[in-house]
Image: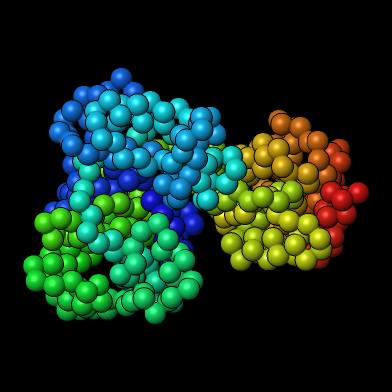
Length: 409
């Protein structure tokens, strides 16, 4: 799985490559035969079932750059999360070398991700590598296609250095997908003969899958022309709109919680909008716009946010308590800023939740609270009478300056 040329939905749910290919196959698209392996003891039977003579052994993690990645525990020469095996024994050895180890790629950061699943796939005779992706274009509110003749691991460099080799177009939702779109892709990719018909069929099926499963991003890199001159989806990355999962039960069952940030996972269970960042000041805010402004002003006054956390307009005392606990569980947090503008969200509820959380988990870092709006006086009264060491702020600028000063001091 490789980074798409344009960003997808940040809170989207991801799935593994082998799961994405299951969906491609369900909608009639050409993929190689393969078997997912969670236990090294099953690797031999999996490889033998595919027949050979070539096998591709792929580490399954929610990050791109696997082919160029390296394992933390690897010995000299044991590099790469995608390896070509020329025998069953070699496929088994590669599987054993990957499972349970930590793969570090350009997208995982230095911490890497532990490989808990491996996909053993039948090898393909690759004649050409092409690039094809789909995403929701927020600028036009349409589904957009991105295609290029330069598929493979260096597609990001192509986008940077030779953007003229990339074709982008969107589909009008009123008219939907048609053969015209498939032919447009085929001509852009330099396909000919039967490949044009295959491309028209592929594009129509991809669009149908995209709409039916509420996909937010779909990337096939590479889309190949094989030795028989046929198109085949050799790799696939797929993300889904998290707001649609209530109606996508089959997709939700593919969720691998071991691949997700534990704090973000805990937040999702309480319907909190949380994204972990690399800063030092934890934020609890109501409303996405106010949360972004809070993060910006923390940066303005010389520090950086440790998270984006929007408790929403209808948060309860229990949700606020959980939000606070998630923030304090982050070891990078050196201070906390609670910034609430009470409209639907009442300031007294925030105050009660904050106090309850502090009493439950303790408070070892500075805490600045800025409240404004509905029941603000009651909220301030609850905090002032709590006996806790909380720094009060009158406005957003004052709150940001105080928390940055407390952390830096």
